[in-house]
Length: 330
Image (tube, rainbow, N blue to C red; front, side, top):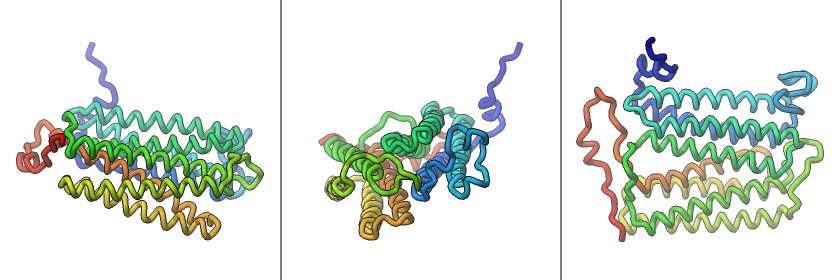
Protein backbone atom coordinates (compact mmCIF):
# COMPACT_ATOMS: atom_id res chain seq x y z
CA UNK A 1 0.00 0.00 0.00
CA UNK A 2 1.57 3.33 -1.03
CA UNK A 3 2.38 5.89 1.61
CA UNK A 4 -0.25 8.59 1.99
CA UNK A 5 1.08 12.11 1.46
CA UNK A 6 -0.16 14.90 3.69
CA UNK A 7 -1.47 18.09 1.98
CA UNK A 8 1.76 20.01 2.63
CA UNK A 9 3.84 17.35 0.86
CA UNK A 10 1.44 17.35 -2.09
CA UNK A 11 1.77 21.13 -2.40
CA UNK A 12 5.57 20.92 -2.08
CA UNK A 13 5.70 18.46 -4.99
CA UNK A 14 3.79 20.82 -7.26
CA UNK A 15 4.95 24.27 -6.12
CA UNK A 16 8.40 25.57 -5.25
CA UNK A 17 8.10 29.16 -3.95
CA UNK A 18 11.13 31.41 -4.12
CA UNK A 19 12.94 32.62 -1.02
CA UNK A 20 11.64 36.12 -1.82
CA UNK A 21 8.05 34.83 -1.83
CA UNK A 22 8.49 33.23 1.59
CA UNK A 23 9.99 36.48 2.90
CA UNK A 24 7.08 38.52 1.54
CA UNK A 25 4.58 36.07 3.00
CA UNK A 26 6.26 36.55 6.38
CA UNK A 27 6.14 40.34 5.94
CA UNK A 28 2.43 40.09 5.15
CA UNK A 29 1.82 38.52 8.56
CA UNK A 30 3.62 41.48 10.18
CA UNK A 31 1.37 43.92 8.31
CA UNK A 32 -1.76 42.00 9.27
CA UNK A 33 -0.71 41.88 12.92
CA UNK A 34 -0.40 45.68 12.85
CA UNK A 35 -3.84 45.92 11.19
CA UNK A 36 -5.34 43.79 13.97
CA UNK A 37 -3.86 46.11 16.61
CA UNK A 38 -5.19 49.23 14.88
CA UNK A 39 -8.66 47.82 14.21
CA UNK A 40 -8.84 46.48 17.76
CA UNK A 41 -8.08 50.01 18.92
CA UNK A 42 -10.83 51.32 16.65
CA UNK A 43 -13.29 48.97 18.37
CA UNK A 44 -12.44 50.47 21.73
CA UNK A 45 -12.24 54.08 20.57
CA UNK A 46 -15.64 53.94 18.85
CA UNK A 47 -17.21 52.46 22.01
CA UNK A 48 -17.94 49.24 20.12
CA UNK A 49 -16.28 46.84 22.57
CA UNK A 50 -19.66 45.36 23.46
CA UNK A 51 -21.14 45.88 20.00
CA UNK A 52 -21.57 42.11 20.01
CA UNK A 53 -23.00 41.29 23.42
CA UNK A 54 -21.70 37.73 23.64
CA UNK A 55 -19.19 35.27 22.18
CA UNK A 56 -18.69 33.24 19.99
CA UNK A 57 -22.01 34.45 18.60
CA UNK A 58 -22.68 38.15 18.22
CA UNK A 59 -25.97 37.96 20.13
CA UNK A 60 -27.57 35.05 22.01
CA UNK A 61 -29.82 34.47 18.98
CA UNK A 62 -27.59 35.47 16.05
CA UNK A 63 -24.08 34.69 14.84
CA UNK A 64 -23.94 38.03 12.99
CA UNK A 65 -24.96 41.54 14.10
CA UNK A 66 -28.56 42.60 13.62
CA UNK A 67 -29.91 45.89 12.30
CA UNK A 68 -30.94 46.95 15.81
CA UNK A 69 -27.30 46.85 16.96
CA UNK A 70 -26.28 49.66 14.60
CA UNK A 71 -22.75 50.62 13.67
CA UNK A 72 -21.21 49.32 16.92
CA UNK A 73 -22.22 45.76 16.13
CA UNK A 74 -20.78 46.03 12.63
CA UNK A 75 -17.45 47.39 13.91
CA UNK A 76 -17.05 44.70 16.57
CA UNK A 77 -18.10 41.90 14.22
CA UNK A 78 -15.86 43.27 11.47
CA UNK A 79 -12.89 43.06 13.81
CA UNK A 80 -13.76 39.44 14.54
CA UNK A 81 -13.88 38.67 10.82
CA UNK A 82 -10.39 40.12 10.37
CA UNK A 83 -9.11 37.25 12.49
CA UNK A 84 -9.96 34.91 9.60
CA UNK A 85 -8.08 37.17 7.17
CA UNK A 86 -5.06 37.12 9.49
CA UNK A 87 -5.24 33.32 9.67
CA UNK A 88 -5.32 33.16 5.86
CA UNK A 89 -2.06 35.12 5.64
CA UNK A 90 -0.49 32.98 8.35
CA UNK A 91 -1.63 29.89 6.46
CA UNK A 92 -0.01 31.19 3.29
CA UNK A 93 3.27 31.70 5.14
CA UNK A 94 3.13 28.18 6.63
CA UNK A 95 2.39 26.59 3.25
CA UNK A 96 5.10 28.61 1.47
CA UNK A 97 7.69 27.81 4.15
CA UNK A 98 6.74 24.13 4.07
CA UNK A 99 6.76 23.88 0.27
CA UNK A 100 10.15 25.49 -0.24
CA UNK A 101 13.14 23.17 -0.47
CA UNK A 102 15.22 22.61 1.50
CA UNK A 103 12.63 22.38 4.25
CA UNK A 104 13.23 24.78 7.14
CA UNK A 105 11.56 23.47 10.27
CA UNK A 106 12.29 26.73 12.12
CA UNK A 107 10.06 28.71 9.76
CA UNK A 108 7.14 26.31 9.87
CA UNK A 109 7.33 26.18 13.68
CA UNK A 110 7.19 29.99 13.80
CA UNK A 111 4.20 29.96 11.45
CA UNK A 112 2.31 27.51 13.65
CA UNK A 113 3.25 29.57 16.71
CA UNK A 114 1.54 32.54 15.05
CA UNK A 115 -1.57 30.47 14.39
CA UNK A 116 -1.91 29.22 17.95
CA UNK A 117 -1.34 32.69 19.41
CA UNK A 118 -4.17 33.98 17.20
CA UNK A 119 -6.46 31.14 18.31
CA UNK A 120 -5.63 31.74 21.98
CA UNK A 121 -6.13 35.48 21.63
CA UNK A 122 -9.49 34.96 19.91
CA UNK A 123 -10.70 32.95 22.89
CA UNK A 124 -9.24 35.57 25.22
CA UNK A 125 -11.13 38.27 23.30
CA UNK A 126 -14.32 36.29 23.84
CA UNK A 127 -13.60 36.23 27.57
CA UNK A 128 -13.08 40.01 27.47
CA UNK A 129 -16.57 40.43 26.00
CA UNK A 130 -18.18 37.98 28.42
CA UNK A 131 -16.63 39.82 31.39
CA UNK A 132 -17.89 43.23 30.22
CA UNK A 133 -14.50 44.62 29.09
CA UNK A 134 -12.58 43.97 32.29
CA UNK A 135 -9.63 46.40 31.93
CA UNK A 136 -7.03 43.88 33.13
CA UNK A 137 -8.20 41.35 30.54
CA UNK A 138 -8.30 44.06 27.86
CA UNK A 139 -4.67 44.91 28.66
CA UNK A 140 -3.70 41.24 28.42
CA UNK A 141 -5.58 41.02 25.10
CA UNK A 142 -3.37 43.78 23.69
CA UNK A 143 -0.20 42.19 25.08
CA UNK A 144 -1.10 38.86 23.45
CA UNK A 145 -1.40 40.72 20.15
CA UNK A 146 2.04 42.21 20.81
CA UNK A 147 3.32 38.66 21.33
CA UNK A 148 1.87 37.75 17.93
CA UNK A 149 3.61 40.76 16.38
CA UNK A 150 6.88 39.63 17.99
CA UNK A 151 6.66 36.17 16.43
CA UNK A 152 5.69 37.69 13.06
CA UNK A 153 8.74 39.99 13.08
CA UNK A 154 10.97 37.09 14.09
CA UNK A 155 9.50 35.00 11.24
CA UNK A 156 10.18 37.82 8.79
CA UNK A 157 13.78 38.11 9.95
CA UNK A 158 14.33 34.34 9.88
CA UNK A 159 12.93 34.17 6.34
CA UNK A 160 15.72 36.54 5.23
CA UNK A 161 18.58 34.59 6.81
CA UNK A 162 19.95 31.08 7.08
CA UNK A 163 19.88 28.44 9.80
CA UNK A 164 23.49 28.70 10.86
CA UNK A 165 24.56 29.21 14.44
CA UNK A 166 24.03 32.90 15.35
CA UNK A 167 27.26 34.93 15.24
CA UNK A 168 27.42 38.25 17.07
CA UNK A 169 28.35 41.23 14.89
CA UNK A 170 29.18 43.31 17.97
CA UNK A 171 30.72 42.71 21.37
CA UNK A 172 28.69 41.10 24.19
CA UNK A 173 28.46 44.46 25.97
CA UNK A 174 26.67 46.03 22.99
CA UNK A 175 24.33 43.03 22.77
CA UNK A 176 23.50 43.48 26.45
CA UNK A 177 22.71 47.15 25.84
CA UNK A 178 20.31 46.13 23.08
CA UNK A 179 18.67 43.65 25.49
CA UNK A 180 18.15 46.42 28.03
CA UNK A 181 16.57 48.55 25.30
CA UNK A 182 14.14 45.77 24.32
CA UNK A 183 13.15 45.26 27.97
CA UNK A 184 12.64 49.01 28.43
CA UNK A 185 10.35 49.20 25.38
CA UNK A 186 8.43 46.15 26.65
CA UNK A 187 7.97 47.87 30.02
CA UNK A 188 6.87 51.04 28.20
CA UNK A 189 4.24 49.01 26.34
CA UNK A 190 2.93 47.38 29.52
CA UNK A 191 2.65 50.76 31.25
CA UNK A 192 0.81 52.04 28.16
CA UNK A 193 -1.84 49.37 28.64
CA UNK A 194 -2.26 50.53 32.26
CA UNK A 195 -2.71 54.11 31.00
CA UNK A 196 -5.42 52.81 28.68
CA UNK A 197 -7.06 50.91 31.53
CA UNK A 198 -7.28 54.06 33.66
CA UNK A 199 -8.12 56.52 30.85
CA UNK A 200 -11.47 57.70 29.49
CA UNK A 201 -11.72 55.40 26.43
CA UNK A 202 -13.25 52.38 28.15
CA UNK A 203 -14.53 50.70 24.99
CA UNK A 204 -18.27 51.08 25.57
CA UNK A 205 -20.70 53.97 26.06
CA UNK A 206 -22.06 52.40 29.25
CA UNK A 207 -20.17 52.40 32.53
CA UNK A 208 -17.21 50.01 32.37
CA UNK A 209 -14.92 49.08 35.25
CA UNK A 210 -11.58 50.88 35.14
CA UNK A 211 -8.21 50.24 36.81
CA UNK A 212 -8.35 52.16 40.13
CA UNK A 213 -5.24 54.30 39.60
CA UNK A 214 -4.74 58.00 38.98
CA UNK A 215 -4.65 58.42 35.21
CA UNK A 216 -2.33 61.43 35.24
CA UNK A 217 0.20 59.76 37.54
CA UNK A 218 0.32 56.63 35.39
CA UNK A 219 0.66 58.81 32.30
CA UNK A 220 3.63 60.61 33.88
CA UNK A 221 5.27 57.25 34.59
CA UNK A 222 4.70 56.34 30.95
CA UNK A 223 6.39 59.57 29.84
CA UNK A 224 9.34 58.90 32.18
CA UNK A 225 9.88 55.53 30.51
CA UNK A 226 9.75 57.23 27.11
CA UNK A 227 12.74 59.35 28.13
CA UNK A 228 14.56 56.22 29.31
CA UNK A 229 13.91 54.46 25.99
CA UNK A 230 15.00 57.49 23.96
CA UNK A 231 18.19 57.79 26.01
CA UNK A 232 19.00 54.10 25.54
CA UNK A 233 18.36 54.39 21.81
CA UNK A 234 20.70 57.34 21.43
CA UNK A 235 23.34 55.57 23.54
CA UNK A 236 23.06 52.42 21.42
CA UNK A 237 23.31 54.34 18.15
CA UNK A 238 26.49 56.14 19.13
CA UNK A 239 27.91 52.93 20.58
CA UNK A 240 27.28 51.19 17.25
CA UNK A 241 29.10 54.01 15.48
CA UNK A 242 31.99 53.87 17.94
CA UNK A 243 32.53 50.13 17.50
CA UNK A 244 32.11 50.42 13.71
CA UNK A 245 29.13 48.06 13.61
CA UNK A 246 27.79 47.04 10.17
CA UNK A 247 25.40 49.49 8.46
CA UNK A 248 22.23 47.40 9.08
CA UNK A 249 22.20 47.78 12.90
CA UNK A 250 22.92 51.49 12.64
CA UNK A 251 20.09 51.98 10.16
CA UNK A 252 17.79 49.98 12.42
CA UNK A 253 18.71 52.20 15.39
CA UNK A 254 17.92 55.31 13.34
CA UNK A 255 14.58 53.79 12.31
CA UNK A 256 13.80 53.17 15.98
CA UNK A 257 14.62 56.77 16.85
CA UNK A 258 12.34 57.98 14.03
CA UNK A 259 9.51 55.75 15.30
CA UNK A 260 10.02 57.10 18.83
CA UNK A 261 9.97 60.68 17.55
CA UNK A 262 6.69 60.05 15.71
CA UNK A 263 5.22 58.35 18.76
CA UNK A 264 6.37 61.15 21.05
CA UNK A 265 4.77 63.87 18.90
CA UNK A 266 1.51 61.94 18.68
CA UNK A 267 1.57 61.27 22.42
CA UNK A 268 1.92 64.93 23.35
CA UNK A 269 -0.72 65.98 20.82
CA UNK A 270 -3.25 63.50 22.21
CA UNK A 271 -2.51 64.63 25.77
CA UNK A 272 -2.92 68.34 25.13
CA UNK A 273 -6.02 67.84 22.95
CA UNK A 274 -7.72 65.72 25.63
CA UNK A 275 -7.35 62.36 23.85
CA UNK A 276 -9.20 62.74 20.53
CA UNK A 277 -10.02 59.29 19.17
CA UNK A 278 -8.17 59.66 15.85
CA UNK A 279 -4.94 60.74 17.52
CA UNK A 280 -5.21 57.96 20.11
CA UNK A 281 -5.58 55.52 17.22
CA UNK A 282 -2.41 56.93 15.65
CA UNK A 283 -0.66 56.44 18.99
CA UNK A 284 -1.62 52.75 18.99
CA UNK A 285 -0.28 52.44 15.45
CA UNK A 286 2.92 54.16 16.57
CA UNK A 287 3.33 51.65 19.40
CA UNK A 288 3.49 48.82 16.85
CA UNK A 289 6.12 50.71 14.84
CA UNK A 290 8.26 51.20 17.94
CA UNK A 291 8.04 47.52 18.90
CA UNK A 292 8.86 46.36 15.36
CA UNK A 293 11.79 48.79 15.21
CA UNK A 294 13.33 47.72 18.52
CA UNK A 295 13.04 44.05 17.59
CA UNK A 296 14.78 44.77 14.28
CA UNK A 297 17.61 46.53 16.11
CA UNK A 298 18.13 43.49 18.30
CA UNK A 299 17.87 40.96 15.46
CA UNK A 300 20.32 42.79 13.17
CA UNK A 301 23.10 42.45 15.73
CA UNK A 302 23.75 38.83 14.76
CA UNK A 303 24.23 36.91 11.55
CA UNK A 304 23.03 33.39 10.67
CA UNK A 305 24.38 33.10 7.15
CA UNK A 306 22.56 33.22 3.81
CA UNK A 307 19.16 31.75 3.07
CA UNK A 308 19.56 28.07 2.07
CA UNK A 309 19.43 27.79 -1.70
CA UNK A 310 17.01 25.49 -3.47
CA UNK A 311 18.63 22.22 -4.64
CA UNK A 312 18.71 23.35 -8.28
CA UNK A 313 19.67 26.97 -7.57
CA UNK A 314 23.23 28.25 -8.24
CA UNK A 315 25.25 29.29 -5.21
CA UNK A 316 26.01 33.01 -5.10
CA UNK A 317 29.59 32.99 -3.80
CA UNK A 318 29.97 36.76 -4.11
CA UNK A 319 26.90 37.41 -1.96
CA UNK A 320 28.16 34.96 0.67
CA UNK A 321 31.57 36.69 0.80
CA UNK A 322 29.92 40.10 1.11
CA UNK A 323 28.12 39.20 4.36
CA UNK A 324 29.52 40.98 7.47
CA UNK A 325 32.00 39.06 9.57
CA UNK A 326 31.33 38.49 13.23
CA UNK A 327 33.06 40.81 15.67
CA UNK A 328 35.17 39.12 18.28
CA UNK A 329 34.34 39.86 21.88
CA UNK A 330 36.18 42.80 23.32
